[in-house]
Length: 225
Image (tube, rainbow, N blue to C red):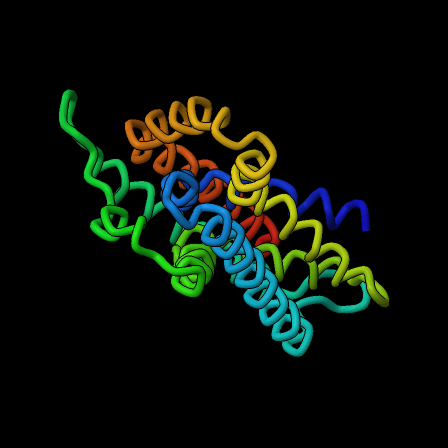
């Protein structure tokens, strides 16, 4: 199981580096309903990762992505395709980055975040965790990797939980920090938000290249071994 956790650890870290959800939850923490909307957003995020990861794991097991001793070509093909997707996203992200001195454009819904209800915050957290191409691809890759590991009993579920906990640190972390530190957290969280807004495109492009290269390498290497 340790090897399986080692395999999904980089994927989980990739999910944590999600500038838009982090910016969204920070903005949510400085609205009148912060103490209800923040936890609701984090809960939606966690639940969506669990659902997507669990479904992927179940489908991968049903599709026999691993034999008793070695992973199947299907698992490597999935990783190869996800890697290619990441590289394409990297090109798109880099081409769409703001020019020097240009104000980065953020999603329009962020302007209305102070009007959100807990239910809408929960739904937004779930959408950003599951529909975002990067997070979806990384969660799919994690589910396939866990299935490949041929774990027994409760080990696949536990490994998936480890993935979800790590992948939720940068979303749930600010919420917990705010609930414990209160108003004193504002300066730290605001500084983080400003940096993420200014560097969102670059961070995402680099991240896509790194994970694209890793998954393409794993997929191609497995198919040609």
